[in-house]
Amino acid sequence: MLKNTLILEDENRGSVEFQVFLFTNKIQRLTSHLELHKKDYLSQRGLRKILGKRQRLLAYLAKKNTVRYKELIGKLNIREIKTR
Image 1 (cartoon, one colour):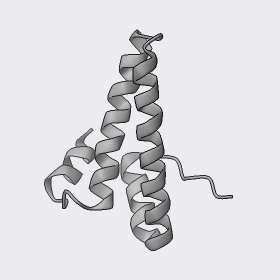
Image 2 (tube, rainbow, N blue to C red; image 1 turned 90 degrees about the vertical axis):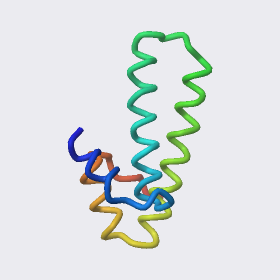
Image 3 (cartoon, rainbow, N blue to C red; image 1 turned 180 degrees about the vertical axis):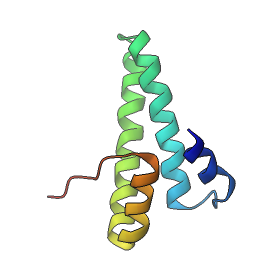
Image 4 (cartoon, rainbow, N blue to C red; image 1 turned 180 degrees about the horizontal axis):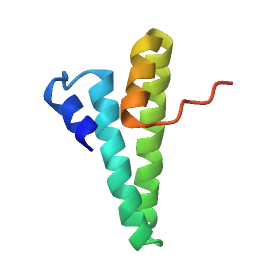
């Protein structure tokens, strides 16, 4: 969690990295919520939407700047996106 606060302090709020960071925090919160409330289908839908948004942002970043992409997934401990 310490790594995530480091990103929060020195990052531009409009940057792709910051947006992915916020989506990752929301995903973690929703995942823990859904472990308790398994039948909360509206939250499941919201989680899938946020996952899709994060996936699209990561694909954009991987295409534009692979170095920043690799650093970001390393910091946030995210698996790499699947390429077709």
